[in-house]
Image (cartoon, one colour):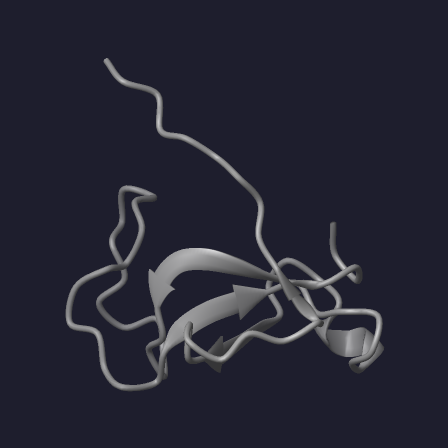
Length: 77
């Protein structure tokens, strides 16, 4: 998926990884006003951002043709 569109993820934007959950869950607490995380880059951005670790912040209310999402669900126990 990298390089197609920026992909929305559930995490809130944080300036660093300090305080990130260590169990792999989404980082949805202590959110600041930076918006949500977009990952992966798009066909219209620098090649260095077209990777899974490439991330950017964007307000969810501001849609853009370079932003997409993947439908996923959490498996119940």
